[in-house]
Length: 325
Image 1 (cartoon, rainbow, N blue to C red):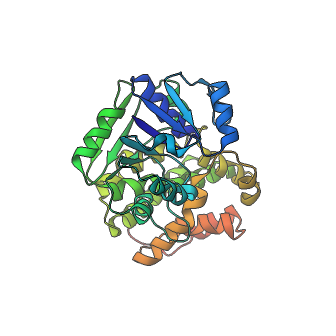
Image 2: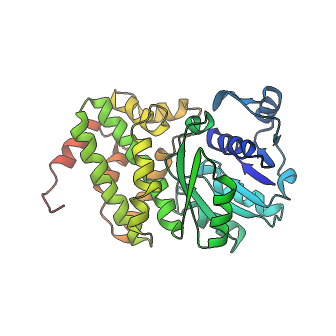
């Protein structure tokens, strides 16, 4: 049995994909009242409206119901990841873990795998990342992703469990690069939305994404990841999707900021989680720790948290001292 922990759009979609393959799957929802909605409607009206959940997906609000699972797919928001890991430790499961959350922990800069091991000890894990807009996959459109981890056997197991004719899974021995690519592209997607909201054109957006990806690659390499991974599905691939799709929460959030809306007010009104908002400050902690310069990320943070005008941030980036690429 596979347990999917977190019934947001992505967790629900992963449960759907498993059920369509005939896998035994149980979907855990943290909040009992919303769990009842899922059970009664057999649909996720808040995060994936209009897509029915087949009877093959068992829904629960109790972690005791998932303790016998052989594989746990973890898909809570990054800010709830530590609490989730702590609660799983309490039920003393012996299963393996596939991390589907893309983010960094606020206040520490830890990757989700580091948070998991800090709560549960030296457990086996793999990471799932790539350009995966949940609604597209739930609707049966083709996509690819990557399972990355230190344990080749676990990578192969996750690949086998998830791979289908509509969802092609690759493997990688580089979980660090995979996690960082998946997490750090989210603030860049916000910035891409801001640029569009300001009406600055495709040249500006291309320059932003290209130079922003260079920042991600520098930081990833400094933290032990491989540039090849950053420029693969988990980094560049996910960035292409998240920085352009109307279904991207990060892009839509940035678009609204570029059109003059206040970041904090937007976050307060969001039902879905804008991961880039919670990732940008921990990414700058890692930048400071490694000595990697990240000017674009710095300006994104100033816009989101220090009331800097987006147009002023663009001007400051464009007038920085000149250098080689």
